[in-house]
Length: 358
Image (cartoon, rainbow, N blue to C red):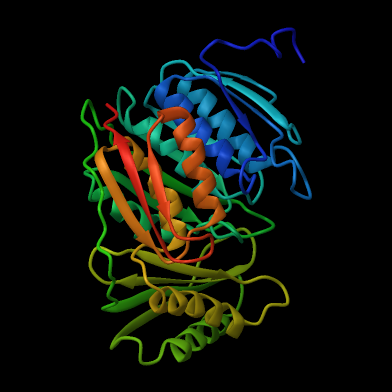
């Protein structure tokens, strides 16, 4: 450690990395809002309750990527580090290429980079290499088909494409994103309806370097589970390009302003039928519960609700520890108010007072 490690600027935000669910979202949200608001932060106890505490490759990649786009001073950036200091400079747009080096989720790194890049001095083009469809992370198709359509309703222009698919453990996938700068305008407030409808379900069942029959089995299991839900259920099967082997099934529920996506990833020893039924079961649980936004999307969009002008609200089918932790971290940087109705694990409503950031 260098001599400046313990020094603190008077405006530095200090965050306990074991806050709430104590995961990597604390790091990513802190990086986003630090770069966006030009506020330095210190995080200690990073992922301290996890089997492998400290920074992993995915978190380290997000920190170094943010360091580059924000011209930041970064300390503690090494695998296993349980403490980092991040002091941002001015965010700049441009052409960037980042390689996680493992099957770490490219979607989560992109999620961290988007808010500051939207307010950069110019548009950006990003290439991210790593995992595109890996466990416990939103797959590329969720970002493209659920998350980005929500952003487009706020007049946020982000286009994504996938060049190569990356599965655990080999990784090696690559996605690209084009981000248009917003300029000096605040985001409009967000308000979702209380009730949802599902008019159609569309999805994709895919394999990489495995027989296409596996994708077909995944599809048939999903269709059997969803039978009778809606007249329109369409799932495409395909083989995709990847340096490794892997399978996934992704389902999108279509129905008005409410947005939801569900996925399951194949791993060695997991039957294709299980992959298909897992994603379908998650969609059915969403349908049976009150609320509009699926739990994963709720977690992703609260930062935009906090940046918008006026009071925004959403209902979700499950209040998750991830969501509550994210709201607490956002408040540390934006000093916005928020209110959560509902218990953890149950349907609920989130209301956020936006700061009208420009």
